[in-house]
Image 1: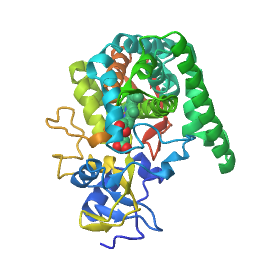
Image 2: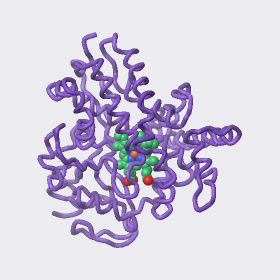
Image 3: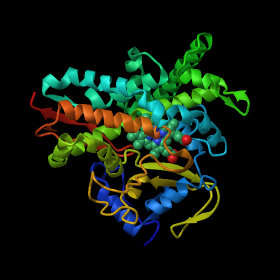
Length: 394
Ligand code: HEM
């Protein structure tokens, strides 16, 4: 197969974004490492190759100037820096995101889910994203940071200003300006919070960051800002996307939904299997630091690679019957949270949010369907359902 084949699969094509699974399988079988046309990135789709690259940061680096376009003034910590510096930041951050610590948020997350459901249940219909999947992770973020729930609207506005400025304008220049301006507002918000917490310390995430030491020295103000900026971007849309994809899948597959409603103890393994099947973070980028070979293809220093987590999660070399969504799947080493040094810091929080939300939703609204005559709209990049109209009998 010609590695610069013009017949490349476009994962951003709306039809492919809606149902990427066949395209992923084609890539794995026909072009597991392929160079996208017109000097595009090298796409890597086999589980084994993706895992190797994720776990070899000295060759496949996360330090790249292109990634700094998200309204940031410096690389986000720890995602855009490589070990060994990245590892030192993770030592500070990991204990604050442990499974045990995240479990302490469960009562608040359950309450938040219940309040959101109370607001919509009698209507017998909703647009799932707006009513549930968008606010819930933002509330979780506020709990995590020890911030008041009144900040919800502000934080939704800030993350949308960075992630989707095109919702406010069709002019690309203007979109860049909105992004840069929003970036400044995010820095200013957290600078103010740092100042407040310095004056009156609290036992919360900011208190932890202010007290943390790296090689005997406190984190600088910029380091704290670069960590907080990333939390805001990494922790909200990803959970929204996963939640929307899960509910869209279950709306279209009432038999499997019935299984979960009948036996909610299966919700944990269903969350895991749907993370594999839907893989919200479709791909993660790396820049190649030295000439290397991956899956038999030579890659030059300086080239970009896209590690297709979504494809790797469908690789028959790793998963038995990968095309079957099986909530009782035994071994499930899905890599929706990545792998290696940059493996998702928030994976315990994300799993908790998804499990609690799915439990509470199905307890109160067990029988729902896509609104007749409507179709869910999926996007590429992050795989999310942008529009998910649901109905149920109230
Ligand atoms: C279903 C939800 C989520 C998914 C699918 C997801 C996925 C990922 C993936 C694939 C990576 C690795 C990126 C890379 O290798 O370049 C990552 C990193 C990260 N995620 Fe998540 N994430 C989710 C939720 C969260 C949440 C709730 C937080 C909370 C703040 C979070 C914080 C982070 C951070 C800070 C990193 C960077 C870690 C590092 O570079 O060391 N994520 N996530």
